[in-house]
Image (cartoon, rainbow, N blue to C red; front, top):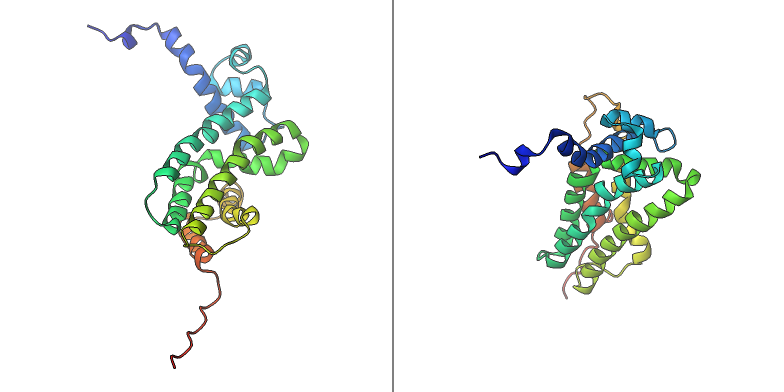
Length: 220
């Protein structure tokens, strides 16, 4: 006996798939061309639907962009927050793990191109900039702050100015996203730059600094 899915008319199955196809096409084009240069006609064409169909799901390019960001980035915050609540290791290991998970799910993917887009075009589109600040930047900073606070509370990290320390943690992420979608997309394969090795190096420097430990005083 055929399954319910196999008896669903092809046109109906196609209709259900369209929002995801539109978001996928929009992410590609936003990353390739930027926000201003991306046209809804192009998104619809790449997804294989009409512009009218696109507007059935997303009433404007701004709403389409917001849906792309929510689908590719914002939707992960809830899962990551739960992981932080149940993490059993040290705060240093938590920081390492957080970088690794971020790189695997955001940094190494097309979604990281959204950050480059925002840095390039934020001044021209204040409404989407405010949206990105509210739904991506602030929650991301809050998660980093939680990791640092945990380390301080457990005596694993020294007290620091958390308002600015979050940017120290963010800086390597921003560099990698810019690198991936600019120089990293063009440099010859012979140029050896491994993001995972870079992350490990940055975390080591972040946790231990550059200064040599002061020599211990000889016992009397």
